[in-house]
Amino acid sequence: MPSTPKPKPNRPSEWQRYLAFSTEIVAILGLWLGLGYGIGKWLEGHPYGVLVGGILAVVHIFWRILKL
Image (cartoon, rainbow, N blue to C red; front, side):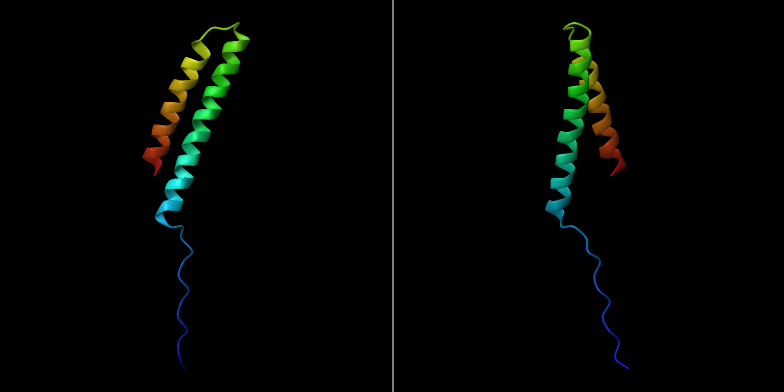
């Protein structure tokens, strides 16, 4: 009885992984900076919201890179 070949796993190619990761980085930056901007507006224009949002975005991105 002839054996049938096993199908290859459907893995994304290398450029697709990089595209997904870069899109995730842009989304993380947009989320944290947007939240920081909103908090800054709520605090009547103080830049601390954007500053804290930017720091949280960088921490989140480094955590995501280390999780790879």
